[in-house]
Length: 156
Image 1 (tube, one colour):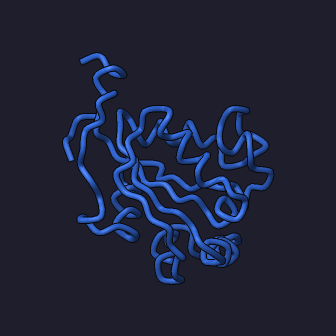
Image 2: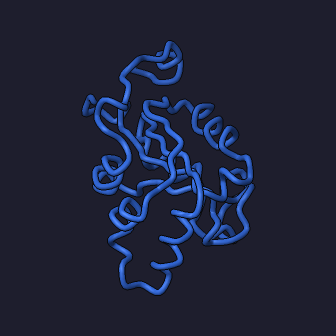
């Protein structure tokens, strides 16, 4: 992966409620329409070990047990997206964690009504990406390719 911000990578999970509600295609489409390149994608059933590793920073908090139970309750979709300032862009497109604070036009603002069932998770920093992504993806599961539209989207 190149070090410039055009090729920053972001980690996203469409949570079990997003899968159950049939929103996977629309959520992926929002990221792609914004110009983010999909470089890794898979449907998974998050294991207890994966959930505990991912959310270790929340261990001991009142919501930890219910978060782990929810994230392991059914299939999810894990993905890695790439593009200019991808982490910040993904966070903007997702909207605030609390749907009541999410702006209309964001994924959560348009589709989520509950803070626990808020459809998507996205790593909030490069450090979070580096911690979370390897829990779900091996290096050979990520693809490096160019989109023809890149030159039409960014001034170089």
